[in-house]
Length: 478
Image (cartoon, rainbow, N blue to C red; front, side, top):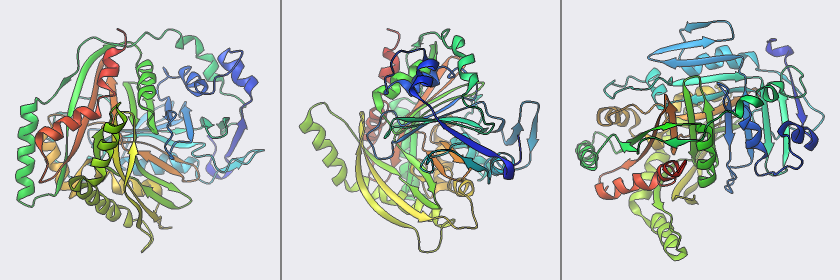
């Protein structure tokens, strides 16, 4: 790969003829074309899809697929590794710093070449991947009490020289590369392999790692910490696990259809797959402007219109949920202010309603201007993991989580993110997320616990949050 100053990034708008030829179709269905293309490489290690899932939310405009990374940074068990096509070496930096030093530096300052106006496109080429919740252990001293029974690393990020981007507002497709190629030949070369994928089905029912009685006992422990003033809010979760067979990509396609979440993602590692249907943004940086949108406060959706409206109104008027949300807003204001210009951090939207197919959410927005002396990856590392899924104070809440949750979280409450060569960054909070490895699936659900939390209601809320995951996956293959 050439050095960054001489690197040229080429962008080609794909014609309908080229797309039809690739997909072997006489006509194109715009609602399926992008996923049809990704399905040709979904089996490839390190293939990554960032998917708005047809969401009508304002955050959903661009779909991005990236593939064939030239370099990869992974982290697990306290060690960080850098890999290319030839070797893997252990490096002394922490995960985000290694990503910036060894990956982003190779494309930083590259020149953009295109016959069209493509300044509006996000990412184009750059670093992308996942940072699991336990990436936080590289930055903070957290006790290791919970069982770590995953092989998927805590952190896995690649340097992607190839991507395809869909602008869902215009219907245009763009192929982006660093080598001047006009079309990703590796996609067509792997088409035959895609046809061999097997249908997805569960081979055992989902089971939680906590009974309701155990979950209630955990909340009693949290309540004691809250009464003692040890912390103010703790995000407590349970994990649901099942065995499966078949292609997880097919399962993801059904999940994204059922949920339409704007921060959905599919990421295949050499060990397994991450299928996320998250509605929550963590941090975005664009043109130096920072935005974070914490979710705190949930109510179920109903098919009856009056009942559904009442559920939304009950959420917006709930003092407990507003107090929880405000705690996290204050935490995130503090987190991003460390890397933003003085007096630039503010809250343009507080306690807004966002409605998805399974639940209503209370969402706030915090913004700021990034300081010129820092970088988006430094901001991300400093704020990681997101306060909306830890509690407050963050470090003490994370200690309580590790004490009470039987297993580590891995990707759950971590992030799928990208940072393009122009230092535009976006990231999700990986709630509503499935991890698949070695024919076993895990998904999680949790909620913020405060002094006036009711154990039965909190337990039911966790079930509401997976109501468009567990039943959907259970029904597949039947």
